[in-house]
Length: 61
Image (cartoon, rainbow, N blue to C red; front, side, top):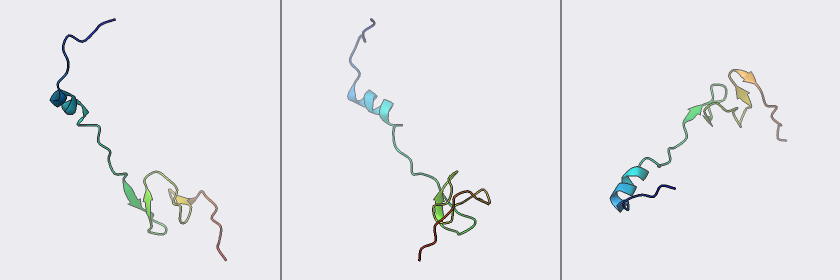
């Protein structure tokens, strides 16, 4: 099995890992109820996705 010839420096390791950062999820607004919702997911508030009701929501009494 091949072995590395030299040890990688801490700076080179840091440069390689510099693109590992996390990104914030993209938040859109629901066109039906105007609540913030993650993209490509049904709205947890009203249950609509792509202009159609896909999740039946319970009414609180």
